[in-house]
Length: 340
Ligand SMILES: [Zn+2]
Image 1: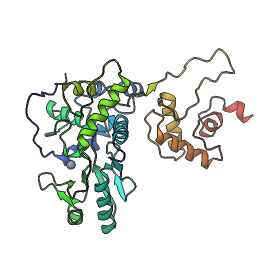
Image 2: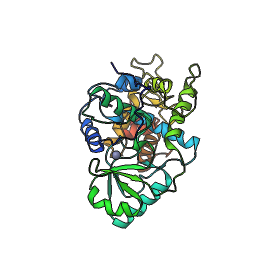
Image 3: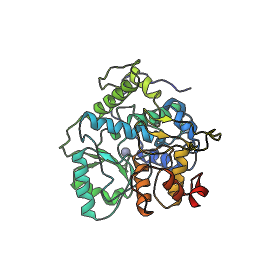
Image 4: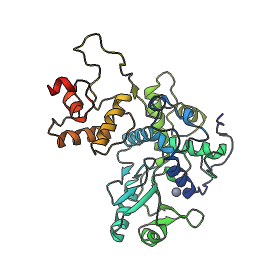
């Protein structure tokens, strides 16, 4: 049973999280626990469903996290910007490579000065991820010995990174306005040089509250930017694949009318298409050496991958997975008919 957060206590002081330990858990978890293997469970899961002793990787809430970041930018344009375009290596899919714009600019300068790739273990952490970590810490799970309450972690302000090779990066980052957290948390740097514009933590909470209200019109909560009990309760009920993603069952019995395809045309849509057929598509793309995340949800990343495949195979580049694209990918049920 997951313990509820006690909002009456005053544990609001900044704490020094053990970032190295948290990052090790993340990398470890990739080799073990539940994740994309069980698509149906993933698609129907809420955060509360995945809060469990051996369910440690915060990347499980990746799609919800990306949706939260999108919504933050709907509230304040460019409040968060991706730095994945810099010379960085993002070490796993639980990492959201986002910073406030001023922090990104200074990081860009530091990386250019050293002229080497920077390996990133953690950057922006969403409310959903922090809720996971905090629960793991409070419940004694996953070896997390300290984590801040949602809304209070240094990683939730869009100004923090955890990196490898920190001792060599330290002097350069310090020149560019980044503060080293010190020996108790040596992998962690925070941008302190100013030019930041937003109270990101407040925007992050509002972004969640807005999304929740949009998809739960009968259960609205205050959009006040405060992470209190009402918000905490809804966040736990939130779908890990994001709001508005509908898992459409794929027909398993042959269609009574032979001319009706027993598969559906897959494409980028709102709400997102999700299911076993999307997962098969993604696996086929991977086999064709197109890089794509196999998560069973047809998002922008899958759209890009499909277009890349279509481009490489002389197909119409429209991101729509119809008969021709399916045939080339080797997932067509009607392959014989087309081949003849
Ligand atoms: Zn950190």
